[in-house]
Image (tube, rainbow, N blue to C red):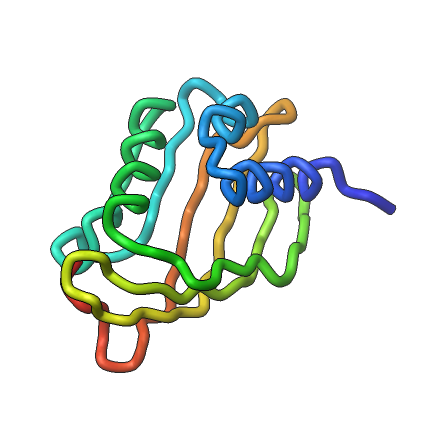
Length: 132
């Protein structure tokens, strides 16, 4: 049985993969809350971002900060209004050349067919996060 919330989230990842943040934002509510876990001084995109402008700023900061060599959402699970995604990313911090890699969990809350909240939990790489 297909889950429309999982399909929605998979479409968001596809938009991100194409670099189409505007398309990604059409799948979010105007009051979206985007939480990327971690300490901002360790990585400038960490923190809470609100509304489409905040989410665009998040993705702009990510694009300016890291060059991904891999970004892989691997497993999708849906329960009621939540979609849980397990994945992995690896890349290089552009400013200093530090390599980063981490397993992650992303949780999407869906309301009326759109994402209203995003939460990211990252397993810190060995040795911690290099300053971005």
